[in-house]
Length: 258
Image (cartoon, rainbow, N blue to C red; front, side, top):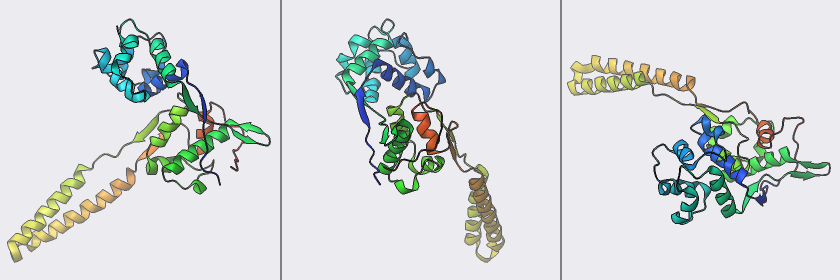
């Protein structure tokens, strides 16, 4: 089984860079979709971080996000003055410096090329680099266990290959059960007090153990009921993910053999 599926390299375009910027802003603000080539650098900086006031403050995170690592003074010509420069200038600048970018390679087979199958193989290849067993990943395999076990970095790699194609990740977070903490603290305190009092403190020890048992039981129940859930929009399987990455609707099952 070939698990190291390669990507294709194509020219980086201003449109691609714009989608990357929309993607990063969309993570914390739905207004990321409203970014356009006509958006000013000042407006873009405010969406990125509303504490940014000067072009050099904005150049640093842009340098890091794009991976260009250019001297800051090279950014000045397209970032300053911030109220007059537009996102079109920034995207053209970044694309010219990137030159090329990675994209999903279609799966080649006797019946022709299949882009969704290539997207599936790409996602599987990325996950195997994270430590997943490729033999366990099929088009019908659920996505959620791989979010919980391998985090979201592999999804970020897919977003770079196809920005704007995937919905946002929704995470139901665990909340601390302060009642359990209180029960554990009281139970431990009573046992400690009973130990210090010797024979006269046996009743305290009994109540302390009772508090501990109740707290542990409640903690286990709460943990089971509040298991973290991760959803990627309405995408539930790797097949859903593959078709979403290439902007297509599922039509048939993906059965790549490579």
